[in-house]
Length: 57
Image (cartoon, rainbow, N blue to C red; front, side, top):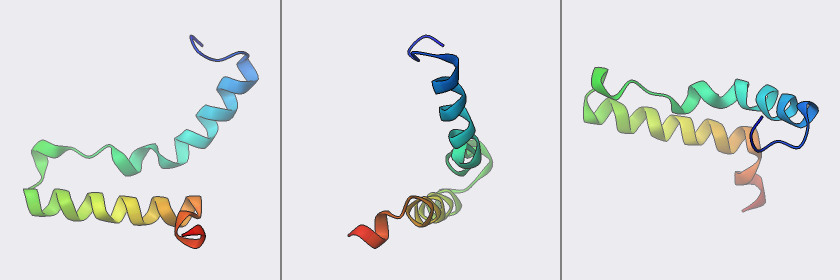
C-alpha cells in the first residue's frame, strides 16, 4: 500500500488491474519476434476495446 491512500483505493485498483494484467505480460523468450509483435498488437486492440479509447478518437 505504499502509494495508496487507503485499503479501499488499493483494492479498487487491484480489482480493475487483475482483468487486464495478463494482456501485457508476455513470455518474450518463448516467442519469435513476429509472434511477440502480433501478440502485443492484439493486446493493445483488446485494451482499446476495453477502455473505449477507439470510440473517443
